[in-house]
Image (tube, rainbow over the protein chains, first blue to last red):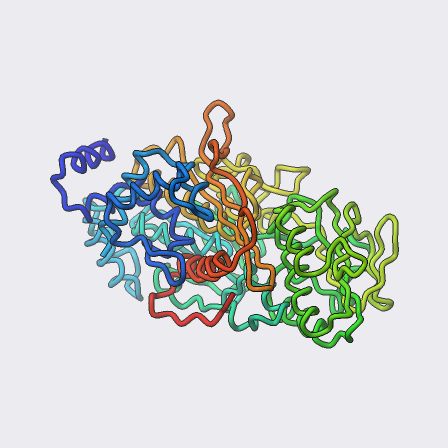
Length: 99
Length: 442
């Protein structure tokens, strides 16, 4: 009940972006899946790009391009092939919200 | 509200203790006592440390006790670079200071007993900790008695270096440095499933890269218990051919499948398989292994002939003992026993547990990933990457189409990514700040 309430708020856009992304447990978990390569909260300590603060539309576009092969990749085609479009959006919103 | 509670806990986490949170009854959820639920975590490696950090982020009122005997974290991933001479032991060791700041109790001790009925954990130091949830992240237990002659005396000379430490990886490096040019390094690969499937083959590359530069007449004999190269076969064989003459009369690497070491003779520096006695100047035998000793104490080694622990993928709870969760290498899953998986399954477990603590149902269809790089020691690396998703029909976690695969070929770019991966996974596991100065290099 609480979860769907939060989800409704996100859809309605009545909460600030940062708060909504961080408050949704599945969103923060799916985003945390990325952090062992891209750094905690998407802030990378090396050659792998940071995801923190990345513009959401760009993030989703790149994931789709990795999946269909139009953007060449090392590991990312496999990762992009494991998630749904809705999950791309969820991750994108989460990382866009991080300063 | 979450932020307020977290801030409050931070300020109250000292001597006053968490009982003070009782005053926030309207704020907290699903509490078992005056404060939040008690979680005891055994082991602060990739699985246990990550879990501890994330459960404190996602369910801040949880009282987390971490029991870990080592004074600092030493990374097994990247430890083969020490054998190559690329890094020193200090470069792959990091402090627990930042983890200590976020958990409620960090106990430098060894667990000696677990009572899953009373739900208590007892340590060598004589302390007993009660738990609502127990998280076992103890890695592996090495079974020296499965290799004849591999006793305490032999272990002074023959190193496994499969738990990275100065006494293991550090000493093996010294042995390789002391070996004369033209010497033979004998190393072994345990039977699957074992910690870090590509690790032994990467080790062969790393040691070969050192020999190539420092003692080019030397040889490496790989005694593999498995019928074939157990991980990233095409990439490793290509690297051995490209850099170390594999497949020619002059190969530095002599790979022998179906050659399980049955006996070690440290005095005569000899390893025996069913077929052969193999002599070496430096011997490195990784014995058979099973889930960590603490898993035996809790009675959760139920899988694979009593060696590993079966778990529910949604919660990482043991299938045989309630309220005991198993992370990382000890668990029997479809995932490889890698640092990345231990780190990420730590988050899966923290996610499921935080949902349960909040009174919500756990995610019925979790997703988790593995990315594992191996270096050649020659400035290049390659990967295997996989996404695992819950499959209701198969009641298991399996990769969707195209979500599993390896590099097309080794590359310098992937070496840069491997180094970056190490720093990021160490930071994510231990909570290292952005200002942390890493010294390891790829």
